[in-house]
Figure 1 (cartoon, rainbow, N blue to C red):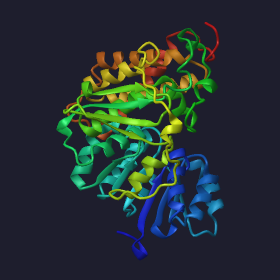
Figure 2 (cartoon, rainbow, N blue to C red; figure 1 turned 180 degrees about the horizontal axis):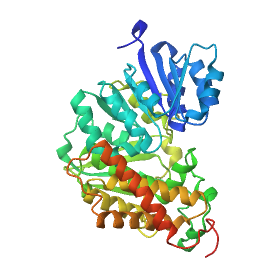
Figure 3 (cartoon, rainbow, N blue to C red; figure 1 turned 60 degrees about the vertical axis):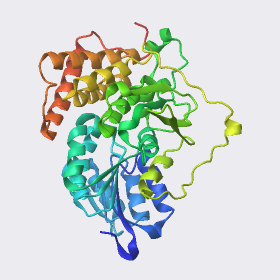
Figure 4 (cartoon, one colour; figure 1 turned 180 degrees about the vertical axis):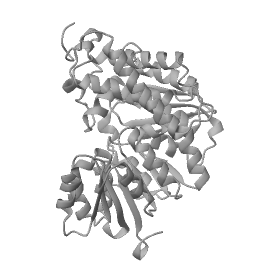
Length: 404
């Protein structure tokens, strides 16, 4: 499947986001090594078109059909095809490729990722929602078609690297680290009044607004606990999170002989992306090298359950199984939308997600012995509907940060 001169055929889904841009940075540094097949993005068609032309992609796809005329105009005369919409994303996933980055944010990233696996490709998975919503489906599809899934979240890449050559049965515990987010030092009494701008400022990372707010609430870490459970097949009680403000240790694996193996690196997503891009080899990646003498100290602390209730919800989701992950993710996304819109306070997000899970469990909507993609998408839809209903029943919406 490799292109001319032994070049690898590469597609990047979610090319205009932070993970996608970091991936394109690495690809652009070695143009002789890659043929770019498809780049996909959302509303930022200007960025998408610039990158598609710069990297000589075969096709550029925007998820928004109403942006297709603009994309076509920007690509006019370049030789790069332009398409749009959900069907176009699936068609892009059908194009032969050796390696595909799955970095579309949200449940929308699941269908093209599943489609790519059917072609036996290597799927570099940065889309948390795929494993949280449909982990068993995704892993079974990869096994069925001889495809390979490589983790791109920095934490799961770290675990993956620490386990290389090890027997998973010897693992006693996996610890994934969390920065604690931009509000980690705020008094608890002040958290209900945090604005989206305040929650969206991260002390260590440059990320999009949604993932940065998820970091502040630790909903992102809740998702990562579930991801660890699904990807590595570890029991929930063998997975935990710990607050590590420096974000230099990405994960630790404790073995049955008492040894603990840690993965350290500067806070740069190109570590994990580069590992997946070069796997099974290890090659140079243009990231900062750690100077441990300059670092001097590494701090760790147990997460406060009162500050980060999302972690307990992750434990519930792992214990429940079935469609609980799909419902959790959808409810979390809906709660985040409401917070950003000013209709929910920062500390009301987790209780809303919990109420959605309560309602759907009572209705028997989370049970599924063998979930299908249609069942996952229906649970996603239902959870969003329930979140809207339950949020509306709490009273008059108020701007985040407004005093009750």
